[in-house]
Image (tube, rainbow, N blue to C red):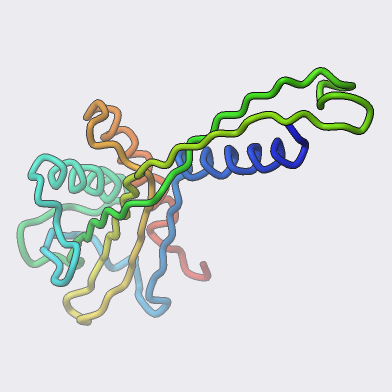
Length: 188
């Protein structure tokens, strides 16, 4: 296999590993909000595209994972009259993945090919696949101010056919990472 092909293959594999196992989270907030004033929250359905997941079990898992994080942050869940309204949107998009295989017949110096300065004519084959990527967007809304005060999102490849317990553990990890910096301290 030529050095050029090997470098392309290595770059592609690194990219795929990053995409397959990476978890990307972001948050933003209203800098004028006093987060110390928020003690209670209640779930609401958010308008717009995405919305709650139509699968009731997944919807419950998402809410349970967020509830766990908000409880750890000192917030109490109530049925009405809360300081914060919490809602989420879930989206799934499909990305193309490439599975590459490389075969070489090398034998030259340092294993790079056939002769001094020569490179082998190895074979690289590829197959494309569709990879579902899920994004979960969580909003915290102050109903008294009628203002969005915090928004976080997490994106990760998903496999709904996987063991539900493993999926839930991944969801918990994502929510812990997402809520890591909540509540916000003055000056942050």
